[in-house]
Amino acid sequence: MRYLKTLLAAAAVVVALSPLAASADENVQLGPRPFFLVEDMQPSDLKTALQQCSSGPFYKSEFSIGHRGAALQFPEETKQSLEAAVKMGAGIVECDVAFTKDKELVCRHSQCDLHTTTNILDTPLAAKCTVPPDFTSATPFAKVQCCTSDITVAEFKSLKGKMDGGNPNAKTVAEYLDSTPNFRTDLYSGNGTVLTHKEFIELAKKFGVKMTPELKFPSVPMPFNGFTQEQYASKMIREYKLAGVKSSDVFPQSFNHDDILYWLARYPNFGQQAVALEDLNTPADVIAATARIPKLVAQGVKIVAPPTWALVTLDANKKIIPSDYAMALKASGMKIITWTLERSGLLKNGGGYYYQSITDAIKTDGDTMVFLDVLAKDVGVIGVFSDWAATVTYYANCMGLK
Image (cartoon, rainbow, N blue to C red; front, side, top):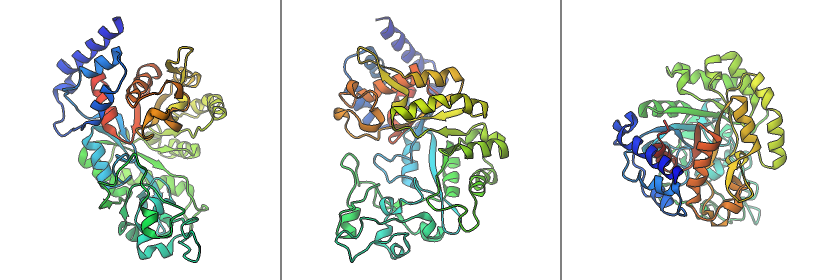
């Protein structure tokens, strides 16, 4: 009961007194999903507190990070996806940065995902793919691979973004493209506008949100036609400087920690904001990540971003609690961001990769909010990437998180 009173009091303060609430953004619209998730929760003090916030007000929060825009329902890394994330209150939006044949920067989650995220196979540009379809084979798309570095930026801009997916067993282009996962939708994929990195920056500036570009691992040998890894990392930062963007509005990311060290040395103001991503897939990976925490701290890394599952575990009563790794990160003084919420489909089967350490506690979609509450309150993350920003925005607004 004491916990319930504390939560209700906090929610009441946010709604009635918070200066953020007082300046609620009338343009922020959350839609039905966060309300559905709250109602889907099992009875608890947290559910009651979240229900008290159902009337808003709702406003932009930097705790809510639009992962590839709003990739749950919009083609990722497109103008429409970014706009949707901002509409749902994301205070920070992401562009995954890759490069084209003419060394221009564009927004793609992988340098070589054009065959699954755009309509390239349905255009003459398919012939330029690293591995084009082989129509002499019974499965012409089994090995297909189309990369941003296969085409110029002008050619890239002629493409249309689509929902991520591809059927390697397809016989026709239409069959290959018709492969959106069943928990997503094609309703908003009719005209996905792909973005250059520069266009992404201008859109984010227009909407008054901060930016978190991720420098993607090249899928081609580097240097690429004389373009080195350092030039690649430098070009990304320089595009913010040339656009007049303050370093405090940018959170550069990379799984390649050498990129982080380069930014710290070459562009220290941006480097102080850099996010060291951690690619953790097994318990052994988490043990290794825990061991390298002191090295990251000594190197000057300020922010680390592991996947959600690595930050939590279950206690003897199957209650979600911070993992030992999460506690070690907190003790180190580094700030924590995590990825990715709303990327797992229905949670009735345990949630898959992002919930793998707490599967036995995940029963319904409403458990998303329980998970988020532990990440925010117990782990102490400063931001959460989500494929549907409204879910995190609702929680952040209710709990008074900037």
